[in-house]
Length: 258
Image (cartoon, rainbow, N blue to C red; front, side):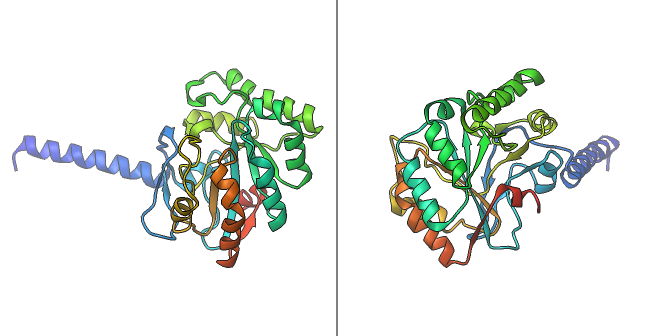
């Protein structure tokens, strides 16, 4: 082997080792939109970042994959007339969920927010204005987005907002995760979701079940949008199907206690 070829080979090997070390030690954390790769039906997907990588920043996207437990969460950027029915269904099944809310939702739907709290649901921080938080590098600006929502929630409910944060649109950066952690927050991603947010192209019930049920897995953090009419219509049957499959429903406090 010529000296030049040997040098190229050694350089490539060094790069490969560096990448491998980054993967196994969790030193590299991708920045961008949260994404999932499903490899096998009924099995947990692989996220943009690993469980251990996220744990360093008090973040998670999945729970104990050895236990048949689901963590049900809803994102709400606005009210679309569906939340009351969703809450009725959750009450019927005695399921506690988490609702990640933005500022205008709390301002315009105080009664619904108070009902969520009264019925044992967790309200989480989806930021005041639903900005792309990965573009905010200044800690005070980042903190204001979360603290303004905290103040609004306390004004409406008289309680402190639980310190759970979900990045708007799932867009994050390592620096964002660090800033949220320093503010006392735990960041909540997800391991099961589907395209339910487009009100101009809502999936049918059959399409929703076809997307959700085969991908359901132990320890799943489920993301649904409470703006979805389909979700409001299918939730009773969906919860029944999951219960029949032996799943129970956990809280975010439990998720982060794992």
